[in-house]
Image 1: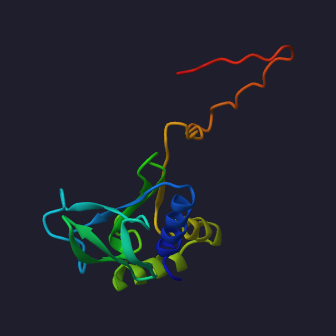
Image 2: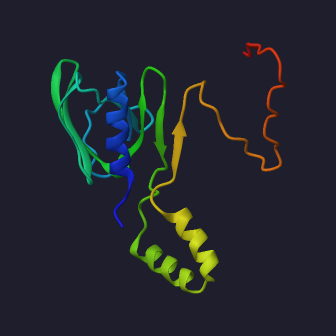
Length: 172
């Protein structure tokens, strides 16, 4: 099955632009075949503004992200393999998604081992593993107003408000 990363990347880029925000890509500049301007990387990574106003000829296909942009007033053609994109997020509020580096990449040997291991498991175990191994591991990046689900299964859901006059309480 094809990687879900390019599809998610295209959808999030469109969603960020539709909400009048500026999409930024976090890229692993050391990934093979990445073509970004030298001197703009920090710790092997680069953050790129991928808004329609900042780039020309943006193309996000199943293999790579490519576009032209100006760096210090000089045009530069960028080429970023999909696997090198570590995150996409909105500059204004930080909402977006982080992709685990290399999560889509398995060597042929690792794929064969996974197939052998799956054949030795029970159907129930194999079903659980298949759910966990589909596509890249993804993490939502949200702003402060994002509500996270409780991580402890023993946590009880909040009690409903008591009947009577409603009140508003500010929590900081």
